[in-house]
Image (cartoon, rainbow over all chains, first blue to last red; front, side):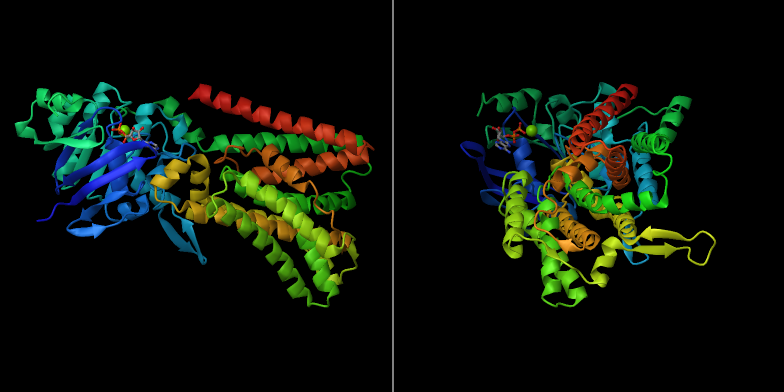
Length: 246
Length: 342
Ligand SMILES: Nc1ncnc2c1ncn2[C@@H]1O[C@H](COP(=O)(O)OP(=O)(O)O)[C@@H](O)[C@H]1O
Ligand SMILES: [Mg+2]
């Protein structure tokens, strides 16, 4: 069976900066892949190429055995790939509900006009938030009025609201308290049980070791490790990240 | 993620109040408007509240409020349209020339509107296709191009005399509730203003396009990540702004029964002022059509009241400046209060 997602020989430069150099990266269905590396190793860039935020200078992306070109995140979302961006990517002036449905609002026809179904979006949005055990002071507040942790929750809710095949989480626990971070890990496990593949980018290596089936290590734009969880120790991973054994 | 908790009384209250923060800003504006009306009634008891004066105000603010409406849509995306005053002048001259070339009234109005839409499209494409760094640049260019074209087309002189069917949109009244004992003569131009504001309100708050326009202004990155077609939405708001400026020109031409090449000079600044007084944020993503409507009325009341009191236009301009400062400062205070509360 072909991999759910396969990125081949991905290369990307930003002006003089070589962000990625011939990176191969694959995710299988219902697999959790930990993607680790030092700051600036190219983790976010690799995943933004996968979602169509950036275009690769060279390399190919294959989805379920078919070559794809994602020109914008709209196209990757339509193919079931969602991402929680490191900077969250929320519209601060809009409510949690509006953010969850941003770009795929529910509408209905009223008198010849296609209007937003606010009630339906609120109902489904609340249901989804409840399912994730997220409680917010109000689903109508602009998200700028929510705490860092609450905003992170909204970003996660948005990425999981639409039956994705693959959810990419870029430092999803960065601004969360310990107990809240634990919930994110539990959510990742739950997603895998539902058959959703997950890519987890995190600096908390213990978290990554706890939930991943496979761990991919980037070092200054190159892939330096691709380990099955059961073959990896903390020491191995740290060594690859700092480049000792590379 | 937040821990589960039973909703306390406090969170219940906060939840109830949540949607009203936007309303609060508008409420303050309405208060300012009513206060101004009260003061004017006291100062000019014999004249201010007469039907003649009120319909006059309504007619006078029609053009500015329509320019402000288009400007508002642009400002929601964190953009700016400096060309609306010139586009209004261009539309006026195009209308007058077409009429004097014996075009049918409908055709003349259509080309005037098309002139506005066309400049708007140029603005939108200059931003999204030519990737000019900021809409300030593209619309500064079209401000000059449209104004120059207006002088060239008109030869620099007014073109007077329009047929009644063209004039009526900006000049005539319509009798509402005609059969009843309370007939009201209502300026057609102000009915058009109300219809346009309602349409814009529906677009911006009831459709996904409107939601995307707010998202682009609030956070372009979020809009991009959500897969929103940013260039298409940006082009749309500039086309709308140009089209509305075209309509403003048609109404103004009707009101003054001519097209004159200096019309609308500097009007973009009044439009921007109405938007800002109306509570929209210059940084994008915030504001309501209703607020802008009241902003335009406040400016009209200010002009009218100061005129009635024989205050010179120079002092009027000074006062307008202070009102802008005050409006924005109140908004800053309101935001700060909101942030302290949460
Ligand atoms: N939009 C951008 N423009 C210029 N350089 C960028 C951009 N995005 C990332 N980079 C550079 O690419 C490299 C990889 O960045 P990134 O993918 O964010 O790393 P990581 O997520 O692993 O910390 C860094 O050197 C960073 O400075
Ligand atoms: Mg990163």
